[in-house]
Image 1 (cartoon, rainbow, N blue to C red):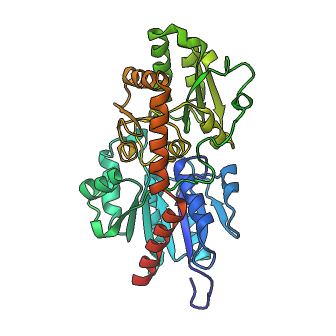
Image 2 (image 1 turned 90 degrees about the horizontal axis):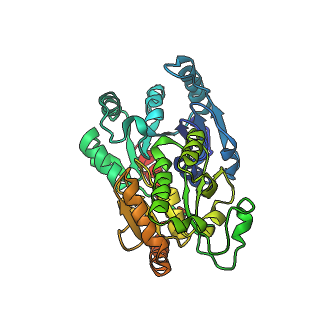
Image 3 (image 1 turned 180 degrees about the vertical axis):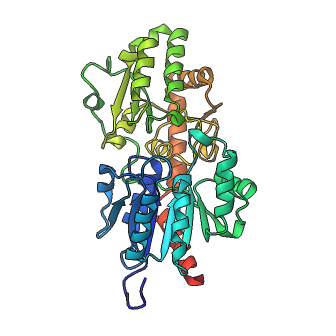
Amino acid sequence: MSGSDTRPPLVLHIIYALGTGGLENGLVHLINGTPKERYRHAIVCLTQADAFGQRITAPGVEVYELNMRAGRDWSAYRRLWKLLRQLRPAIVHSRNLAALEAQLVTLFGPKLRRVHGEHGRDMSDLEGTNYKYRLLRKAMRYLIHRYIAVSRDLSTWLVDYIGVRPDRLRQIYNGVDQSRFHPLLADQNRESLFPKDFLAHKRSLIVGAVGRLAEVKNQRSLLQALARILEINPDLRDTLRLVIVGEGPMRHSLQSLAEELNIAQLLFLTGDRSDVAELLRAMDVFVLPSLAEGVSNTLLEAMASGLPVIATRVGGNPELVSDEDNGLLVPVDDSEALAQAILRLIDSAQLRQQMGQSGTRFVRENFSWPQTVAQYLALYDELLAVG
């Protein structure tokens, strides 16, 4: 940023892609929640952006696509270098491993400050133990001025396994839009949200999940759990329904598995939807069967919506779900345990209500986007003050 530029400092966010997801949702809330006199924002997608970027309401936010090819695409890094020279950001904020390497291109700017966020891990490195990836992270820690972890689990991992200095690390939870995600306040015609005749009758019990249809989200386990429930209690075929909100590469595989398990008529894969809040309020039980998680936005949104939740005991999930209080924790990738947990909740309306109310209180007291945005901006202020 030139000395004659009187505009607020620019934060350039580098991400792999701008699509539907928790990381992207948090980025949009940060940008929309930043007072225009504090900071400006721009986004660089190493690959592409989709319509999700239209949720950005802050004025003047540019989104750049580098269209990076698979493998080593040095031309994409040259385009990033040119962008950095053009935009002259004060801070570059990368997120997750795919964007971390791009911070090497920022070395041209001696006064530029570097922030890196860890939001979770994917199928290629569920435990964060991949030797090559750890080596890259360890090397890059000398260049990164501040780290942000979205869970205590990731924070501990960064210190203990990557060697990040605790004084360079901040743990910041995502928030929840509590004006949008809240318990049902009036009668809702939930039948209108689903295909005709999907719900057998008003007594239908809906088990739901929200998330990208990707291997790490492990919706296969949820389908297997539903099939197991029907083995235990075949009568539930008349009332039990499964709704999975989201889109992704596993759609065809999940549809095929549902047909193989003879539950296709009980399953609704909604695709991406703009009415997620309404869909959550139509559910009776929310399930997060992931193989790995940072801190799940959808889990928090379900709790804010008054739903009892079931989640795997991985990543940041135990930081949100107090077992037997606001939900149930189950072992990872254990469809039998998942089936038994779902059965407990669908068998007891009282238990569902108690856990749902407890979850709503927990989210209201601890998770708001204004609080989250304030913590991010305070970190940016701190970096520029010492720069």
